[in-house]
Structures are given as structure tokens and as C-alpha cells.
Image (cartoon, rainbow, N blue to C red; front, side):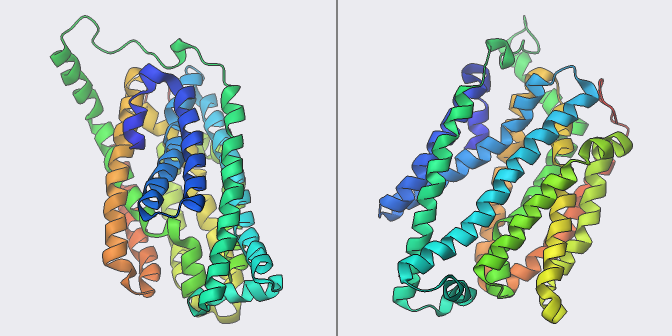
Amino acid sequence: IAAAILLLIPKAGYKKILMFCSLGTTAAFFSAVYINNAAILYVSTLLALTGVQLHFIILSPFIAAYTEGMKEKGINWYTRTYYMGYIGYFLATYLGGALVVKMFSMVAGITFDAAKEATRFIEDMSGVMHSQYLQGNRIVLVMVGIVSLLSIIPILLIKEEKDDYQFEQSGDGISLKEKVSTSLKLLLRKEARAYLLYWAFISFAMGLFTSYYTVYLNRVLHIDKVTSSLLVSISYIAIVLFMFFTPFTVKKLGKKGTIVFTLLLSIPFMLIIANGDKFGTLMVPIVGIALFIRAGLANLSSPADSALSMDVVPKDLRPIYTALVNFTAGIVSIISGMFTGSILFVTLDGYRYAYYIAAVLYAIAAIILLIGLKGFKPADADD
């Protein structure tokens, strides 16, 4: 859905779509809390995820539109946008875990430490305590909904002109059939196909573990809710810190080289996380360090990734290609979700195996990018 909405950019512009993101996500949070209906919960979840995903995937064409002609300096804006977003992720993840436990303790009338301990084995909670725990979650969701609503303010401050999102289309003066044929040839050229396939493998791999960090830490490694949220939050700090090195790394290795380097180097740390319980009393610090480094390495390349995806197609086809890339990622993520739900996560050990499978997929994705973009050099590229 988010990918399809991207196709509206040439007509609606970025500002209106960003407004939809914020309002849709806000409505979803409040609906999930205040409307006790299973169908509404499904719709709310879909709306929230669409808004969040759309916020993310619109970044590439949005930044590309405003950094046109900046050449190697453009990567600095991709980097700034990403690390500001991850600062928000850090705050949300850390405060989410701590606030849930705090609200849970207040609703249940127990101490914070007692509530924290109870979250180590959620499945063992009594019916009454589990209900109180869910109420703590609801209170935090309301808080997040308010924050989401406030995000409308910076959107209103964006100054947007039609020239920012309406481009001269390739093939002006020729028939519609010829325009479609020309666009398909450009979209499906070797480099574009290679990036699309690379991103499909990465999306499937990420779907196996990135959404389940706290579930794995909490229910498989039995790390309490506050600590597990803290570990994930610290990993977002790593993302911000490592991104400060993105411009330097891109200058040395190029965009493609940066992506391949960080993908391969993050694999050993994924394997450490998968075997966290093998470290005994050192489990928490070792898993925390592995999460920190893996997250930092994997996301150091995010700005380069977005910039590279815009390099493989002409300017006027960027929104279409971004939609195609993210539509593919969405389909792959659905398949990944079906795989985890029906096969991989039928036992708790599946959350551990997810890291092994993802590590292999990361390696394959790196090889695809190396081979598929061999010799590729955009006109204004620095790599």
C-alpha cells in the first residue's frame, strides 16, 4: 500500500503524503486503544504500518529531489535525515519499555522492580496481572499517539513548489505505448534489476528478526522487559554514531562498497546474538555489544543504500522505481511473515534460527550487489 501511494507523488507532492502518514498513524494508535473490535485492530495495524513504512520509503526520492546536483555532498543529507530518525527510534524504544513497566506497576499497585521482574516471564502472569500489563501498554500507546499527532507541525513548515515533485517525463512527444516501453526498459536494466533483487533478499532477511528483537531477548533469552528494551535502544544509539562515519566510508569505498562491507561485517555479530545464552553470566553485556555493533554496521550503509537506489534510474523515474522497490519489499515481507508465523516461529528456538538464515541471506545479497553493479558508475557519482 505504501509503495502504491508513492506513485501519487507527481500529482500530490511530498507534503500531502507526509501529512497522510502522520494522521493515519495517529488515528491507528487511538483506534487500537479505544475501539474494542478485532476488525478495527487489523485495520489500525495496517494503517499504522503503512504510515510508518511510507515515512521511511519516501525519504529516498524526497532527499534526492532537494539534493539534485550536489554530487558527493548529497550523502550528507541522507545521513542527517537517517540519524535524526534513529534518535527518535532510540527514545521511543527505550521509553516504550521503561514506560510500559512503569504504567504496569502503577496500574497493578506494585513496585517498579516487581513489575520489571514479572515481565521476564509474561506467559506465567496470572489473568488479572496480564490484564494490568496490557493496560500499561495501552497508556503508552496513547502517549505515542500524541507524539505522532505533534509530527504534523514540522510537516506544515515544509515549503514545497510544484517543481520539487513534478518532473519532465522521459519520452515527451511519443505515444503512451512507447513511453511505457521506454520506462520498463529503464526500470529493468541490469543495475536496476540487480538492486531490486538485492533488496528483496535483504527485506526477507530483515523480516526474520528485526521486528522481534525484544521478543527474542525477552522470551528466548529471558532478559526482563526493561533491560531488553534498553539493549535495543542502545543499538539505535549505535546507528546514529556509526552514521557519522557514512560520508567518510562512502568516500573511501563508494556506495556499493560501503553496503557490501557493512553487510558482511555484521554477520558474525548476528551469530553471536543467536547464541547469546552460551555466554552464561556475561550474556547481557555480550549480546548488548553484539546488538550495538551489528545495528551500527548494518545501518551505517543506509544513507548510501538510499542514494544508490536513486542512482540506478533517471531522475523522472525515481518515484516509480522507489515504489517498485518497496512494493517488492512489501511482497517479500509478507512471504517472510508467513514463513515465520507458519514454520519458523512455531517453537521459540525459531527466533534463534532466524539469525542463522538471515546471515546467509545477507551474504547472498552482498554477492548479488557486487556482481550486478560491477562496473556501474552514475554520471555524477563519487564511487
